[in-house]
Image 1 (cartoon, rainbow, N blue to C red):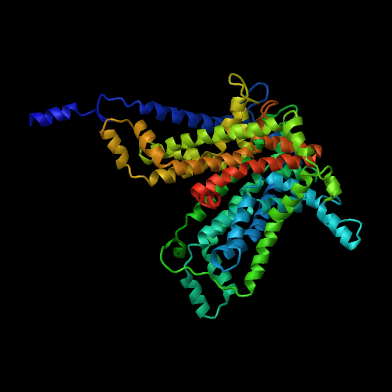
Image 2: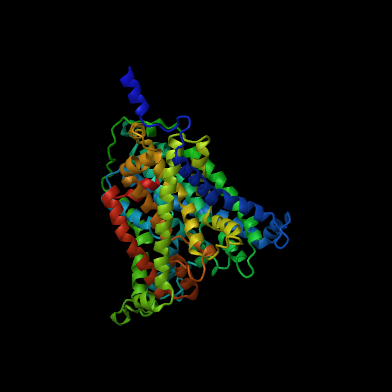
Length: 577
């Protein structure tokens, strides 16, 4: 008994015992403080600013009266809603047949189709918009020139500078969201129900319309809502196409409020309906995709065999290649042509080929090369901060270390419902004025990018933490280690692949982020996406194309690393969670 008592007395104190202070609590407090700084403070300042008078700071509704007191401001809001609806429907037309063909049929080239959807997914929407200006600009666009050459007509039929042109461009670069949701659902559908339909006389097409797609309808609707939200929150594509077409949407109107003078109070008021629509539709999307009424999608049993299309499989493959031609082949062919051309309008002749555009961007332009470096530095810092912050929050929530830990998880995913332009206005309102005066600094861009992509990091970190057995961490604590030691020596090493995946999923889109950057950059902190936008306003498409290709090429090694470590379609799969 004496020996046993002596052993127990000598055992190290475990965290949680009376009189024992675990220094890890300082880390938890710091994580919570950073989360409040990144998410809560800008949102509160955004709301407060929308009710403040510009000079006196007194409470007023005048900002809302100004924001919605003119017909063109209201028209911009209505244009955004209409654009979101049309773009989402077009994206559904592109995505749903592809998802069905890849997930459920014997169409040839299914792996190639997935790869091309990934290529579309990693193409910045504003780069796609530039490519389609080269393709479908009035008269000078290549499609119009080919049409006039073939028919002898004096004008071509295509005009990218139109509402329809903008809707098509947005749909072409947002349909991967619907593809991701729909393929994830269709790959869980058992063939038994399709077999039953075939026994009753239904062919493959009728079975698809009456059985297969209805089972995946919640996922399809969820993807449509995400595309709608993407369309109304985009800035780059509308700025490049809608403004020359002489119509406004919400994001371009917000940008105009940041002209000279900056009217941040009016911008904050004008952003509120966009935020409200986004929050409402995200809630609807979550309710739809979390429905458990479609048993065929949630069950694990049942055989899953590809549907045999016979000769129609080549028709379906042709449709897949048609969509790929619109989103990948044609845009990149003419982006590359423009990047290597002395003048893009002179065509593909050898005497028009030059490396001057790349030389100018990399070595002669005052800020272009620095903007690319800034993009990667800020994206790397943002991804690192976001991964470690969300890992800490996910650990706190999963292990129930603090009361109301679920609130912290909610704060991490809350930026998902805040469009990038609205988030940027919140950061401007909160941190641009003294005493912090962060406007135009690298720090405010890093903080904004970190906040923008917190949901990506948290979703991946939370799923990874839940997969770990807590007994290994408890073993560390029994031996006298703190939770921080367990987190550093046990949790992080076990999750390094997951953390790498989350880092890449944040880093890659952060390098091309425009919606937040356009409102927050300064003369010395311009990023590549802003530089591309500036060049588009100057009409300098050759050098713009060169810069866009440099940005894409520098991203490819990261994709290769992600595919080797996490799987071929890691970006698509992880973004479906």
